[in-house]
Length: 124
Image 1 (cartoon, one colour):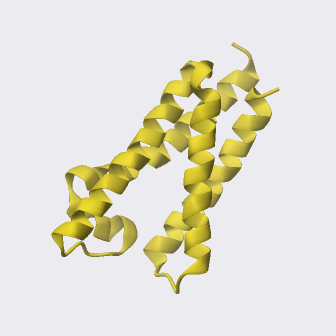
Image 2 (tube, helix red, strand yellow):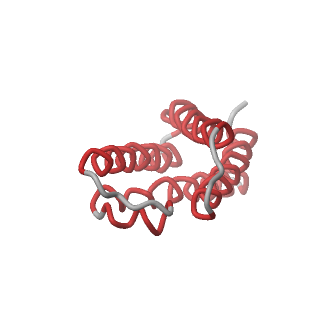
């Protein structure tokens, strides 16, 4: 395995972990307060946030899988880019936002940069 492959795999796994972290909300909805600075009071909001957590975790799983099976790389990158860009577009069009939500936006910008590096290293 070449150094570029090792670096690309490491970057991809890092972004996968970033997507898996919110998955804790699927099992423990009260954690949304520490992650996002919001309290989940109603059952409908809890359902929506738990569903969001599952979807983000699926992006993380696909990114992790595609780090070792490049046949999944393009769909995984596309899904991750769309997910990050959609959140950032919504973030920029709304607000003002508290510190926890700004941290999420910064994490997504960092993830986009890392994904860009993965594209540069792995795709022809």
